[in-house]
Every structure is written in C-alpha cells, then in structure tokens.
Length: 330
Image (cartoon, rainbow, N blue to C red; front, side, top):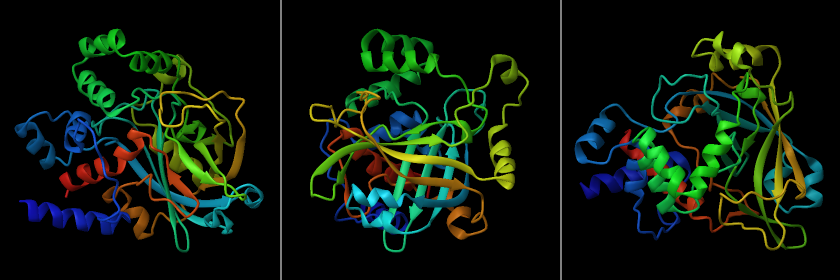
C-alpha cells in the first residue's frame, strides 16, 4: 500500500509540476489527510472509501476555459521577476463554486477562479475566491471550521459562538450579493507571498483581481428569475463576443502588517502594483491543457523566480492537501 501511494505521489508530482524532494515539509497537530477528510466530509473509513468511488473533491461544480495574460511592462521598474517580462502568456482557467456537491445552485454568492499561467520556462498558478475575508488563521481552526459546517445549522452556530474568525467570515458573506457573472466578480488570493524588488528587498504582498467590466451584482428579483445553472453558460456565451478581463494587482504590506495570517485584512490604503491583465476568451479551449484541466491541480506555490511563499500555514498546507485529494480521485 505504501509503495502504491508513493508511486501515485510521484505521478502526481509529474502532472502538477511539483518535486517529491521539495514539496513543503509540514508540521502540525492536524495531518494533511485529516484536513482533506474535513473538507470532503469523510471522517471515517467507510465514508472515505465511498468518496474515492465518486471522486469526491472540493469545488466539484466548475468548468475550464482559456485565454492569455498580458504583463504590465512598467512592473519591471519595481520588481525583479523575469516571468513578467514576457509579452503574452497562455492561461488555463477554472471557474467554480465551493463545496463537494457538483449540483450546487449558482444562486449563492460564492465564486472561485483558479488560473495556470504557463510561460516559456516557468509557471504561475492562482487559487482565488471572491471573499477577501478568510475563516481560519491556522490549521486547527481550518479543520474545526470544515468539520463543524458539515454539521449544519448547529455546527455553524457553534462556530459563530466560539471562533471569532469564522464569525467574521459568516458576517461578511451575509453582505456579499451574488454577481451576475464570474466575469463581474473580484477575486482575492487571501494568502501572502514574498516578492523580490529591483533593489533586492523582499516585499510581502497579496494577489487581487479586479474585473475590467466592474462588479455587477444581482438583485433578489433578478436572482429568482434565473435557473440554478446560469454561470457557466453566461460566461462561455459572453467570451464569444468579447473577452472577460481582470486587472491583476499585488497589494503590498507595510512593516507591522500581519503577513502569515490570512484572516487579517490590510487597509485599502496599502500600495498596489499593477501586474498585468488576464483575458479569458476561450481561444485555447481545444488544447489538451484546457480539456484536461479538471484532471490536475492548481498549485499556488508553483512560483517563478522572484516570488516565494510566506510562512502562512494555510498557504503551505494547500499543495500537499491538493495532492492528497488528487490521489484519492485517481
């Protein structure tokens, strides 16, 4: 069994651009397998095996499409990241909803965008959500949150009463209306990364995507008239006419800002650097990378030279957790 699992790990690393030797070393009271079980709602052997049979995964409802990324040439005046010196870079995108239900209603507020930007020699992946507020500052909180939300209203109330970060997240979600399209949502990378400046300084920052067409939300009346599966058709129809576009920014921290806790928001007054623009137009939808998008993972710590992960425990748990989940689906 252990030999088979190692073989699967090696296969996964080949498919996802990871190295077996350089995968993050992870120390915590909660194991990676337990984290995946908490997300999947598979706390015992029977449910875990049943989950494997149906290839259970988070963000089960989603679809892939494609486009390109145009770096901002002025970024080179600030950051020493050769990856962004390319003129245009292919993009594979996956838009999704949260949760393990592949039949979730699109009428909820949650929107997620994952990207693979594959350059000539390096790649950059993004895993983003339309909420800048995250619900857990460490793995124990993350595990408890995922376990309790599977218990329904009682579990959610427990979180509201006992975990301030979970309460802040739920309070924010209450105020977040559903967008009319994936294309009209802002997206945030809640985790921090370390960026190398031209003078050699290390600058902590977070990713954010601003929709070029603006944030446009649905009223309750509009929402009630829509089917439960409108988001995919809407975006794929839209991009036949014109690309869906987002400006990509790095929000920079100042000394004293909390870098390793994704629940801590930085003030809107923090400087932002324009990195470039993502254009989703479906132009590469017939290519293998797009058609097989669902078969791999989006690895947020697959980074080009000049960008490294912060010490955020949530960030550094993502890749091994994604690998564990991926292996269960093979």
